[in-house]
Image (cartoon, rainbow, N blue to C red):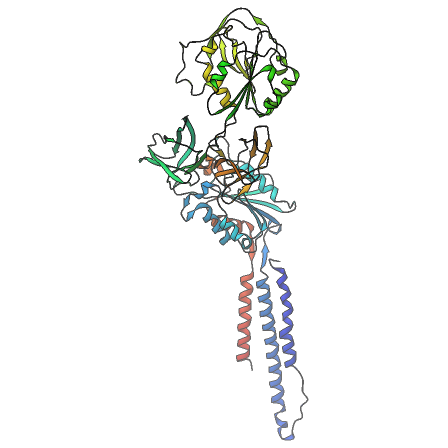
Length: 630
């Protein structure tokens, strides 16, 4: 026989109390009998013996009652196998992903599961419980009640392989039997079967199922087109059921509702558009009303503060065509002759154009290589009689003296994104009279009629394979020159996305020339992300330090630099689950069913009830002795 609370056995020392009381009542007195009552002596002797017997019976009854009460509180059990006597470690995984927000029979799946655990687990059971974003080691239900009930849904999602490995890492006692309990709705990981149990670890599954899985989601938002202040935003929506009525979307900018639109989801998907005129950077939110999962009902978006693009052209030839291209307010344009170049200008540029330099000295090539290494862009237009280009990646500057025609455009290249409504076959293509003999065409943008490259890109450097002066080429008069050079400059400025996903490794370029540590802050939270400073921008890396969706202010001390938006990943709204057959035999439909199963498997005979009844029996015996025994 074993005891769950053996320390209570010290209560057996209280047996000394009735014994002491009994001894005080058994004190002997010397009595002297008068002669006239001597004939009563035999009767007195008989009565004294019966009283002595009564006192011993009362003492035994009281001692037995106290012993039974102490043993009952010590909770004696009789194990029926060796496994029940072995020490056991239990790790419980409670899924708090956003899919557990759906309603079951008794409310939200997560809240109901947490409540049942706190109600049904034994008060003295020590266990380790973890969610997707929290861990409570070697605890009991009294210690974690407040934390568990107040725990919010998490954007972090652990695969079930990760859940098992994390549970095993939390169970450190090598001599104890290991048991893990997984409580989840068990969303399916596409293409992956449910993992097998770990070796030497007992696994129990509790599947909680929602009553309804209807859900509408805002999937993606992006800028479809932008011209000056006019902007067109496209929103992609989806549903996992047939939606009969149009879905209404609202667009707030700077907390002001500025637009609404409706879209009918055909084949469970649809596209909506917002067209508006925006004077300031966007700090907005697009949202819908839906009773399904809440995390995909809204999406935060933002655009950075406008910043001019720094363009420097170093000219060994006529630069009039470049001077005309970069006259807009969006450019900070500088044009210098090659003999007048100030090397200190280069590090502050987003893009540098080498316009037919006759010689590139080592000092200049070093500065240019530093620029490209730090993320800046370079455009190389070679001169026919030149030297030093091998130091910036263009060798073999020997020209063939015959003409070629540019006949092929890589329409999929980012330089031509949004330029053409369709692929053009009868375009007015330019021609050249001489080209370089050898070219490297890893990323061709424009090609000659023989398939060789007229313009190609290598990392952040654009190379032309011929000079663009009017004597050698008519490219300056071609319609292609505007989108090519304009988009080269536009793409040289690191562009922030409308939003980023939480729990992803995001590398974000923030345009600033100021010195200082960048921080991200919203109304109640501020964090300093990992960052690397370059000459014209700072590259920040975000990960799991951000956990709340919303728009964050990028600051240097108290000065506001820009805004970045972060949203929950949409993987939790698929609502496709593993079947009972996928999960296997160790599956329970409720926490009640699991705890009953575990208690039954322990095969322990609990004796405390019998000792309580024994205590009551001996107390009744004491009353009967006092009443009927003379």
